[in-house]
Amino acid sequence: MRIAVFGADGYLGFPLSLCLLGRGHEVIAVDNGVTARRAACTGAPSVPADPGPLEQRLGGTGATVVEADVRDQERVRQLLQDVDVVVHLAQQRSAPYSMLSPEHALETVSDNLDSTMAVLFACRETGTRLVKLGSMGEYGTPSVPIPEGEWTLELGGRTARLWFPRSPGSFYHASKVCDSVYLRFACQCYGLTCIDVQQGPVVGVNTAELRERNACTRVYYDDVWGTVVHRFCAQASAGHPLTVYGRGGQTRGFLSLADSTWATATACEQIMDLPAGAYMEINQIAWTRSVRQLAEEVAALARERGCPAALSHVPNPREGCELEEHFYEVEAAVLRNWGLVAEQPQQVLGETLDYMLAHSRELRASVLAPRHTFRDGGDTCRDGHG
Ligand SMILES: NC(=O)c1ccc[n+]([C@@H]2O[C@H](COP(=O)([O-])OP(=O)(O)OC[C@H]3O[C@@H](n4cnc5c(N)ncnc54)[C@H](O)[C@@H]3O)[C@@H](O)[C@H]2O)c1
Image (cartoon, rainbow, N blue to C red; front, side, top):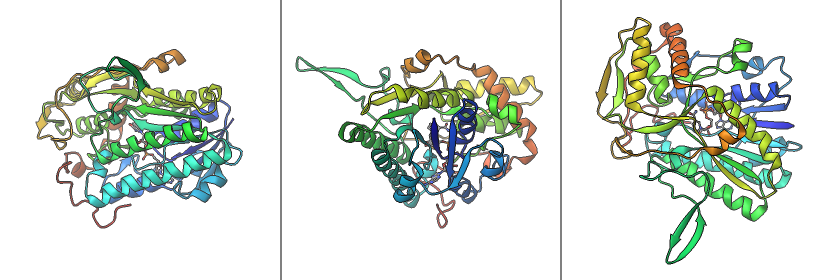
Protein backbone atom coordinates (compact mmCIF):
# COMPACT_ATOMS: atom_id res chain seq x y z
CA MET A 1 0.00 0.00 0.00
CA ARG A 2 0.97 3.65 -0.35
CA ILE A 3 0.92 5.16 3.14
CA ALA A 4 1.55 8.79 4.06
CA VAL A 5 2.97 9.39 7.54
CA PHE A 6 2.26 12.97 8.67
CA GLY A 7 4.71 13.79 11.49
CA ALA A 8 7.35 11.34 10.26
CA ASP A 9 10.24 13.15 11.96
CA GLY A 10 8.69 12.77 15.42
CA TYR A 11 9.18 10.36 18.30
CA LEU A 12 6.52 7.98 16.93
CA GLY A 13 6.59 8.91 13.24
CA PHE A 14 10.17 7.90 12.47
CA PRO A 15 10.01 4.36 13.91
CA LEU A 16 6.52 3.95 12.42
CA SER A 17 7.84 4.87 8.96
CA LEU A 18 10.63 2.29 9.30
CA CYS A 19 8.14 -0.35 10.46
CA LEU A 20 5.79 0.30 7.51
CA LEU A 21 8.72 0.13 5.08
CA GLY A 22 9.78 -3.14 6.72
CA ARG A 23 6.28 -4.52 6.09
CA GLY A 24 6.67 -3.78 2.39
CA HIS A 25 4.61 -0.56 2.15
CA GLU A 26 5.52 2.51 0.18
CA VAL A 27 5.95 5.46 2.56
CA ILE A 28 5.58 9.20 2.01
CA ALA A 29 7.16 10.78 5.07
CA VAL A 30 5.94 14.33 5.76
CA ASP A 31 7.06 16.79 8.45
CA ASN A 32 7.84 20.48 8.90
CA GLY A 33 10.19 20.16 11.89
CA VAL A 34 8.02 22.23 14.23
CA THR A 35 8.34 20.04 17.35
CA ALA A 36 12.11 20.42 17.38
CA ARG A 37 11.72 24.20 17.01
CA ARG A 38 9.10 24.40 19.77
CA ALA A 39 11.22 22.27 22.10
CA ALA A 40 14.31 24.40 21.44
CA CYS A 41 12.19 27.42 22.29
CA THR A 42 11.42 25.96 25.72
CA GLY A 43 15.13 25.19 26.27
CA ALA A 44 14.57 21.44 26.05
CA PRO A 45 16.89 19.30 23.93
CA SER A 46 16.06 15.76 22.87
CA VAL A 47 18.37 12.77 23.19
CA PRO A 48 20.10 12.64 20.78
CA ALA A 49 20.14 16.44 20.46
CA ASP A 50 20.13 16.27 16.67
CA PRO A 51 19.41 12.92 15.04
CA GLY A 52 20.07 14.46 11.61
CA PRO A 53 17.84 15.32 8.62
CA LEU A 54 14.92 12.96 8.05
CA GLU A 55 15.94 12.46 4.43
CA GLN A 56 19.29 11.12 5.58
CA ARG A 57 17.80 8.97 8.34
CA LEU A 58 15.42 7.34 5.87
CA GLY A 59 18.14 7.12 3.23
CA GLY A 60 18.22 3.88 1.27
CA THR A 61 14.71 2.83 2.35
CA GLY A 62 12.87 4.07 -0.73
CA ALA A 63 10.70 6.43 1.35
CA THR A 64 9.73 9.76 -0.21
CA VAL A 65 10.51 12.57 2.22
CA VAL A 66 8.51 15.79 1.92
CA GLU A 67 8.85 18.97 3.94
CA ALA A 68 5.36 20.39 4.24
CA ASP A 69 2.97 21.94 6.73
CA VAL A 70 -0.07 19.70 7.01
CA ARG A 71 -2.28 22.65 7.98
CA ASP A 72 -2.05 23.67 4.31
CA GLN A 73 -5.24 22.24 2.75
CA GLU A 74 -4.09 22.49 -0.86
CA ARG A 75 -0.72 20.87 -0.12
CA VAL A 76 -2.36 18.04 1.80
CA ARG A 77 -4.79 17.42 -1.06
CA GLN A 78 -1.82 17.06 -3.42
CA LEU A 79 0.08 14.82 -1.04
CA LEU A 80 -2.83 12.40 -0.63
CA GLN A 81 -3.43 11.78 -4.35
CA ASP A 82 -3.15 7.99 -4.87
CA VAL A 83 -2.45 7.35 -1.19
CA ASP A 84 -4.31 4.42 0.42
CA VAL A 85 -3.89 5.40 4.06
CA VAL A 86 -2.67 8.50 5.89
CA VAL A 87 -1.49 8.35 9.50
CA HIS A 88 -1.97 11.77 11.07
CA LEU A 89 0.56 12.33 13.87
CA ALA A 90 1.49 15.91 12.97
CA GLN A 91 0.15 17.97 15.83
CA GLN A 92 1.20 20.02 18.84
CA ARG A 93 1.35 17.09 21.22
CA SER A 94 2.46 18.42 24.62
CA ALA A 95 -0.17 18.98 27.33
CA PRO A 96 2.17 21.19 29.44
CA TYR A 97 3.06 23.29 26.34
CA SER A 98 -0.64 23.94 25.78
CA MET A 99 -0.86 25.30 29.35
CA LEU A 100 2.14 27.68 29.24
CA SER A 101 0.21 30.83 28.29
CA PRO A 102 -2.95 31.95 26.44
CA GLU A 103 -0.86 32.09 23.26
CA HIS A 104 0.32 28.49 23.66
CA ALA A 105 -3.23 27.32 24.36
CA LEU A 106 -4.51 29.04 21.23
CA GLU A 107 -1.60 27.80 19.14
CA THR A 108 -2.36 24.23 20.23
CA VAL A 109 -6.08 24.25 19.58
CA SER A 110 -5.84 26.17 16.31
CA ASP A 111 -2.90 24.18 14.87
CA ASN A 112 -4.48 20.87 15.81
CA LEU A 113 -7.83 21.91 14.39
CA ASP A 114 -6.26 23.21 11.15
CA SER A 115 -4.29 20.05 10.51
CA THR A 116 -7.21 17.73 11.25
CA MET A 117 -9.53 19.74 8.99
CA ALA A 118 -6.97 19.78 6.16
CA VAL A 119 -6.52 16.00 6.43
CA LEU A 120 -10.24 15.32 6.78
CA PHE A 121 -11.27 17.28 3.68
CA ALA A 122 -8.36 15.92 1.63
CA CYS A 123 -9.44 12.38 2.58
CA ARG A 124 -13.00 13.17 1.51
CA GLU A 125 -11.72 14.20 -1.91
CA THR A 126 -9.12 11.50 -2.48
CA GLY A 127 -10.82 8.56 -0.72
CA THR A 128 -7.71 8.04 1.43
CA ARG A 129 -8.40 6.20 4.69
CA LEU A 130 -7.29 7.83 7.92
CA VAL A 131 -5.53 6.51 11.01
CA LYS A 132 -5.53 9.37 13.54
CA LEU A 133 -3.61 9.49 16.79
CA GLY A 134 -5.75 10.71 19.66
CA SER A 135 -5.07 10.33 23.37
CA MET A 136 -6.44 8.31 26.28
CA GLY A 137 -6.32 11.67 28.06
CA GLU A 138 -9.52 12.56 26.21
CA TYR A 139 -11.39 10.47 28.79
CA GLY A 140 -9.71 11.77 31.94
CA THR A 141 -10.04 9.45 34.92
CA PRO A 142 -13.71 8.52 35.42
CA SER A 143 -14.47 6.30 38.39
CA VAL A 144 -15.76 3.51 36.11
CA PRO A 145 -13.94 1.38 33.49
CA ILE A 146 -13.33 3.22 30.18
CA PRO A 147 -14.92 1.24 27.32
CA GLU A 148 -13.43 0.90 23.87
CA GLY A 149 -15.67 2.72 21.40
CA GLU A 150 -19.35 3.18 22.11
CA TRP A 151 -21.11 2.08 25.30
CA THR A 152 -24.72 1.45 26.24
CA LEU A 153 -26.61 3.98 28.35
CA GLU A 154 -29.92 2.99 29.93
CA LEU A 155 -32.12 5.91 30.88
CA GLY A 156 -35.89 6.35 31.29
CA GLY A 157 -36.50 2.74 30.33
CA ARG A 158 -34.67 3.18 27.02
CA THR A 159 -31.18 2.27 25.84
CA ALA A 160 -28.81 4.06 23.49
CA ARG A 161 -25.35 3.36 22.07
CA LEU A 162 -23.40 6.51 22.84
CA TRP A 163 -19.97 7.97 22.99
CA PHE A 164 -18.33 7.64 26.37
CA PRO A 165 -18.11 11.09 28.07
CA ARG A 166 -14.89 13.03 27.61
CA SER A 167 -13.11 14.90 30.40
CA PRO A 168 -9.83 16.36 29.10
CA GLY A 169 -7.22 17.65 31.53
CA SER A 170 -5.48 20.27 29.34
CA PHE A 171 -6.10 22.35 26.22
CA TYR A 172 -4.03 19.81 24.30
CA HIS A 173 -6.36 17.00 25.39
CA ALA A 174 -9.38 19.21 24.65
CA SER A 175 -8.05 19.66 21.09
CA LYS A 176 -7.93 15.87 20.73
CA VAL A 177 -11.56 15.62 21.89
CA CYS A 178 -12.52 18.11 19.16
CA ASP A 179 -10.59 16.04 16.59
CA SER A 180 -12.60 12.97 17.57
CA VAL A 181 -15.88 14.89 17.28
CA TYR A 182 -15.01 16.16 13.79
CA LEU A 183 -13.76 12.81 12.54
CA ARG A 184 -16.75 10.84 13.78
CA PHE A 185 -19.06 13.37 12.15
CA ALA A 186 -17.07 13.30 8.88
CA CYS A 187 -17.33 9.51 8.74
CA GLN A 188 -21.08 9.72 9.20
CA CYS A 189 -21.64 12.65 6.84
CA TYR A 190 -19.04 12.15 4.08
CA GLY A 191 -18.38 8.41 4.32
CA LEU A 192 -14.78 8.91 5.48
CA THR A 193 -13.19 5.78 6.95
CA CYS A 194 -11.19 6.38 10.11
CA ILE A 195 -9.52 4.57 12.99
CA ASP A 196 -9.23 6.99 15.89
CA VAL A 197 -6.50 5.63 18.14
CA GLN A 198 -6.84 6.72 21.77
CA GLN A 199 -3.31 6.10 22.90
CA GLY A 200 -1.74 6.18 26.36
CA PRO A 201 1.73 7.63 27.01
CA VAL A 202 4.36 5.74 25.01
CA VAL A 203 7.50 4.55 26.75
CA GLY A 204 10.89 3.59 25.38
CA VAL A 205 13.55 4.22 22.84
CA ASN A 206 13.73 1.15 20.66
CA THR A 207 12.01 -0.95 18.04
CA ALA A 208 13.33 -3.85 15.99
CA GLU A 209 13.76 -1.55 12.98
CA LEU A 210 15.64 1.13 14.96
CA ARG A 211 18.00 -1.54 16.34
CA GLU A 212 18.53 -2.98 12.89
CA ARG A 213 19.55 0.43 11.49
CA ASN A 214 21.41 1.43 14.68
CA ALA A 215 19.18 4.52 14.61
CA CYS A 216 17.54 6.71 17.26
CA THR A 217 14.28 8.57 17.47
CA ARG A 218 13.86 11.94 19.26
CA VAL A 219 13.34 11.37 22.99
CA TYR A 220 12.61 14.30 25.32
CA TYR A 221 13.04 14.25 29.10
CA ASP A 222 12.03 17.71 30.42
CA ASP A 223 8.74 18.73 32.06
CA VAL A 224 7.18 20.16 28.88
CA TRP A 225 8.04 17.55 26.24
CA GLY A 226 9.18 14.48 28.20
CA THR A 227 6.62 11.89 29.25
CA VAL A 228 6.84 10.61 32.81
CA VAL A 229 9.02 7.53 32.33
CA HIS A 230 11.51 9.39 30.16
CA ARG A 231 11.72 12.11 32.83
CA PHE A 232 12.31 9.58 35.61
CA CYS A 233 14.97 7.69 33.63
CA ALA A 234 16.83 10.91 32.79
CA GLN A 235 16.63 12.11 36.40
CA ALA A 236 17.94 8.77 37.72
CA SER A 237 20.78 8.82 35.17
CA ALA A 238 21.80 12.35 36.15
CA GLY A 239 21.68 11.69 39.92
CA HIS A 240 18.62 13.97 40.27
CA PRO A 241 15.74 12.92 42.57
CA LEU A 242 12.80 11.40 40.72
CA THR A 243 10.15 14.13 41.03
CA VAL A 244 6.77 12.50 41.72
CA TYR A 245 3.94 15.00 41.22
CA GLY A 246 1.96 15.23 44.47
CA ARG A 247 0.92 11.89 45.96
CA GLY A 248 1.77 10.05 42.75
CA GLY A 249 -1.39 7.96 42.52
CA GLN A 250 -2.09 9.30 38.99
CA THR A 251 -2.58 6.09 37.02
CA ARG A 252 -2.41 5.75 33.24
CA GLY A 253 -2.25 3.04 30.59
CA PHE A 254 1.16 2.84 28.90
CA LEU A 255 2.66 0.94 26.01
CA SER A 256 6.15 0.59 24.61
CA LEU A 257 7.43 2.37 21.50
CA ALA A 258 7.74 -0.98 19.74
CA ASP A 259 4.15 -1.90 20.64
CA SER A 260 2.82 1.50 19.59
CA THR A 261 4.63 1.22 16.26
CA TRP A 262 3.35 -2.31 15.71
CA ALA A 263 -0.22 -1.36 16.64
CA THR A 264 -0.33 1.74 14.41
CA ALA A 265 1.18 -0.13 11.45
CA THR A 266 -1.39 -2.88 12.01
CA ALA A 267 -4.18 -0.27 12.11
CA CYS A 268 -3.01 0.95 8.67
CA GLU A 269 -3.53 -2.56 7.31
CA GLN A 270 -6.75 -3.33 9.21
CA ILE A 271 -8.45 -0.13 8.06
CA MET A 272 -8.56 -1.46 4.50
CA ASP A 273 -11.02 -4.15 5.69
CA LEU A 274 -13.46 -1.68 7.25
CA PRO A 275 -16.58 -0.68 5.33
CA ALA A 276 -16.55 2.84 3.85
CA GLY A 277 -17.91 5.32 6.38
CA ALA A 278 -16.73 3.33 9.42
CA TYR A 279 -15.47 5.26 12.43
CA MET A 280 -13.61 2.88 14.76
CA GLU A 281 -12.15 3.93 18.09
CA ILE A 282 -9.47 1.82 19.72
CA ASN A 283 -7.75 2.17 23.07
CA GLN A 284 -4.03 1.72 22.60
CA ILE A 285 -2.54 0.73 25.96
CA ALA A 286 -0.76 -2.40 27.18
CA TRP A 287 -0.35 -2.02 30.98
CA THR A 288 -1.33 0.41 33.73
CA ARG A 289 0.88 1.93 36.41
CA SER A 290 0.66 4.83 38.84
CA VAL A 291 3.31 7.53 38.68
CA ARG A 292 4.51 6.47 42.16
CA GLN A 293 4.87 2.83 41.06
CA LEU A 294 6.83 3.88 37.98
CA ALA A 295 9.18 6.02 40.08
CA GLU A 296 9.77 3.13 42.46
CA GLU A 297 10.42 0.71 39.59
CA VAL A 298 12.82 3.07 37.81
CA ALA A 299 14.63 3.83 41.10
CA ALA A 300 15.04 0.11 41.84
CA LEU A 301 16.44 -0.52 38.34
CA ALA A 302 18.78 2.46 38.75
CA ARG A 303 20.06 1.13 42.08
CA GLU A 304 20.74 -2.25 40.44
CA ARG A 305 22.96 -0.27 38.02
CA GLY A 306 24.83 1.49 40.84
CA CYS A 307 22.92 4.82 40.72
CA PRO A 308 21.66 6.02 44.12
CA ALA A 309 18.15 7.06 42.94
CA ALA A 310 15.78 8.73 45.42
CA LEU A 311 12.13 9.79 45.11
CA SER A 312 10.99 13.34 45.87
CA HIS A 313 7.27 14.16 46.13
CA VAL A 314 6.96 17.72 44.76
CA PRO A 315 3.89 20.02 44.70
CA ASN A 316 1.81 18.86 41.75
CA PRO A 317 2.31 21.23 38.77
CA ARG A 318 -1.03 19.94 37.44
CA GLU A 319 -2.92 20.57 40.68
CA GLY A 320 -6.60 21.20 40.02
CA CYS A 321 -6.39 19.61 36.55
CA GLU A 322 -5.91 15.96 37.59
CA LEU A 323 -6.74 13.62 40.48
CA GLU A 324 -3.80 12.29 42.50
CA GLU A 325 -5.55 9.09 43.60
CA HIS A 326 -8.29 7.44 41.55
CA PHE A 327 -9.70 4.28 40.00
CA TYR A 328 -8.38 3.49 36.50
CA GLU A 329 -9.36 0.66 34.21
CA VAL A 330 -9.38 0.63 30.41
CA GLU A 331 -10.83 -1.86 27.96
CA ALA A 332 -8.27 -2.59 25.21
CA ALA A 333 -9.52 -5.69 23.43
CA VAL A 334 -8.80 -4.69 19.83
CA LEU A 335 -5.02 -4.78 20.19
CA ARG A 336 -5.22 -8.22 21.82
CA ASN A 337 -7.49 -9.44 19.03
CA TRP A 338 -5.01 -8.16 16.46
CA GLY A 339 -2.38 -10.28 18.21
CA LEU A 340 -0.28 -7.81 20.19
CA VAL A 341 2.15 -9.54 22.54
CA ALA A 342 3.09 -6.57 24.69
CA GLU A 343 6.62 -5.86 25.86
CA GLN A 344 6.78 -6.01 29.65
CA PRO A 345 7.32 -2.83 31.71
CA GLN A 346 10.48 -4.13 33.42
CA GLN A 347 12.17 -4.66 30.05
CA VAL A 348 11.07 -1.28 28.61
CA LEU A 349 11.98 0.71 31.72
CA GLY A 350 15.41 -0.99 31.92
CA GLU A 351 16.15 -0.31 28.26
CA THR A 352 15.09 3.34 28.57
CA LEU A 353 17.21 3.80 31.68
CA ASP A 354 20.23 2.26 29.96
CA TYR A 355 19.72 4.65 27.03
CA MET A 356 19.62 7.69 29.32
CA LEU A 357 22.68 6.40 31.24
CA ALA A 358 24.56 6.04 27.95
CA HIS A 359 23.65 9.68 27.12
CA SER A 360 23.96 11.06 30.67
CA ARG A 361 26.65 13.60 29.68
CA GLU A 362 24.23 15.14 27.16
CA LEU A 363 21.40 15.64 29.67
CA ARG A 364 20.76 19.32 30.43
CA ALA A 365 20.63 19.76 34.24
CA SER A 366 18.46 22.90 34.06
CA VAL A 367 15.44 21.03 32.63
CA LEU A 368 15.45 18.01 34.96
CA ALA A 369 13.25 19.57 37.67
CA PRO A 370 9.65 20.70 36.96
CA ARG A 371 9.62 24.33 35.76
CA HIS A 372 5.98 25.11 35.00
CA THR A 373 2.51 24.67 36.46
CA PHE A 374 -0.76 24.17 34.62
CA ARG A 375 -2.43 26.99 36.60
CA ASP A 376 0.22 29.66 36.14
CA GLY A 377 2.03 28.42 33.04
CA GLY A 378 5.45 29.95 32.80
CA ASP A 379 7.21 32.61 30.83
CA THR A 380 9.30 30.12 28.85
CA CYS A 381 9.10 31.01 25.20
CA ARG A 382 6.30 33.57 25.54
CA ASP A 383 7.62 35.61 22.63
CA GLY A 384 8.70 32.86 20.32
CA HIS A 385 6.08 30.15 20.44
CA GLY A 386 5.52 28.13 17.32
N1 LIG B 1 4.16 10.07 22.33
C1 LIG B 1 3.14 9.72 23.08
O1 LIG B 1 3.31 9.22 24.21
C2 LIG B 1 1.73 9.92 22.55
C3 LIG B 1 0.66 9.44 23.31
C4 LIG B 1 -0.64 9.65 22.84
C5 LIG B 1 -0.85 10.29 21.64
N2 LIG B 1 0.22 10.73 20.93
C6 LIG B 1 -0.04 11.45 19.67
O2 LIG B 1 0.75 10.89 18.64
C7 LIG B 1 1.17 11.92 17.74
C8 LIG B 1 2.68 11.88 17.58
O3 LIG B 1 3.28 12.03 18.85
P1 LIG B 1 4.85 12.16 19.02
O4 LIG B 1 5.15 11.87 20.44
O5 LIG B 1 5.55 11.40 17.95
O6 LIG B 1 5.03 13.72 18.79
P2 LIG B 1 6.21 14.51 18.06
O7 LIG B 1 6.00 15.94 18.38
O8 LIG B 1 7.52 13.89 18.39
O9 LIG B 1 5.90 14.23 16.52
C9 LIG B 1 4.99 14.99 15.78
C10 LIG B 1 5.69 15.40 14.50
O10 LIG B 1 4.77 16.15 13.70
C11 LIG B 1 5.42 17.28 13.18
N3 LIG B 1 4.41 18.33 12.96
C12 LIG B 1 3.64 18.95 13.89
N4 LIG B 1 2.82 19.84 13.31
C13 LIG B 1 3.06 19.76 11.98
C14 LIG B 1 2.50 20.41 10.85
N5 LIG B 1 1.54 21.35 10.97
N6 LIG B 1 2.96 20.08 9.63
C15 LIG B 1 3.92 19.12 9.47
N7 LIG B 1 4.49 18.47 10.52
C16 LIG B 1 4.06 18.79 11.74
C17 LIG B 1 6.46 17.67 14.21
O11 LIG B 1 7.53 18.41 13.67
C18 LIG B 1 6.89 16.30 14.74
O12 LIG B 1 8.02 15.82 14.06
C19 LIG B 1 0.66 13.24 18.30
O13 LIG B 1 -0.52 13.60 17.64
C20 LIG B 1 0.36 12.91 19.74
O14 LIG B 1 -0.66 13.72 20.26
C21 LIG B 1 1.50 10.57 21.36
